[in-house]
Image 1 (cartoon, one colour):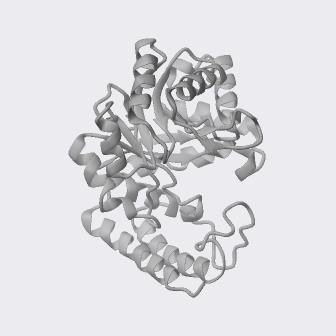
Image 2: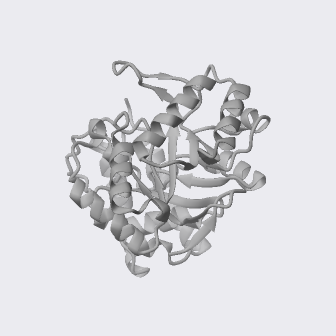
Amino acid sequence: MKYTRLGSSDLNVSRLCFGCWQLNPKFWGEVDIAGWEEAVRGALDVGINFIDTADAYGDGVAEEELGRFLHSAGLRDQFVIATKFFWNFSDGDTRFADTTHDYIIRACENSLRRLQTDHIDLYQIHSWDALTRPDEVARAFATLKAAGKVRWFGVSNLNPEQMDLYRDHFEINSLQPGYSLLDRRIEQRELPYCLRHGIGVINYSPLYRGLLGGRYTAGSKIEDGRAFGPFFHGEGLRIVAEAMEKAKVIAAELDLTMAQLALRWTLTHPAISSSIVGVKKPDHILGALKATEGPLSQEIWHKVGNLFSTAVAKVEALPD
């Protein structure tokens, strides 16, 4: 496994990050916890030391399962743990964005309790709060860092202007955005910004919610929470499946699967520190390892990228 330093922090993280969003039963359904635990052990065995979750994943469920297992197995110190805050779901019935000082302190304490740890390695703002108060966020972060409860701070789903507002008040060590062959929007602004300012990038959904994993065809029926996305049904799915069939030929020439090719494509970008792979079972993470063995050539990177950029343009041109 290859490793990289995350931004200006001292965190040395694996190029693949073990993602815990799949422990959100509201979106992904029930997960075989025994199989998931086996996946965590398997990831560690092959050198993956980076694991990402959020308090919002199942409204605490993902953090609780991760904390329970790492504590019982004695594995907490083997992983760099990243988690996120943003959604105030404390009353159990509603959610709303909350980046106030008092809520950040409370959210962090709750995450520490669920994770059964005394510190969080990377604490991230999950999204942009329209009522954000950078000075309050900075004050909360300073308190948490001084107490040793958080080591480093990052943000997720923010644009350069939003990051600038925060950077006036505290150091941003990482950005967590969506990035894949089917979603390249951050190439224009966010990725150059992070390169310029030495901010690490941990991209989520490199397989675009599993669609780029290679097992779906034009005739697949996707009936879970993804079903209403334009790429997941009807003509949109047919167009993406056609691009995948062409990409699979390129992948085979490189002795890669479609999923490995999609992951290697994201990891080839110089701004990307680590790619998050969502995991339910061991194959999801162990099958991705080959993606980290080296970058794609410039020619192949553009060739594969253009295949899917063309597909995205065709889907976006479809009538509503």
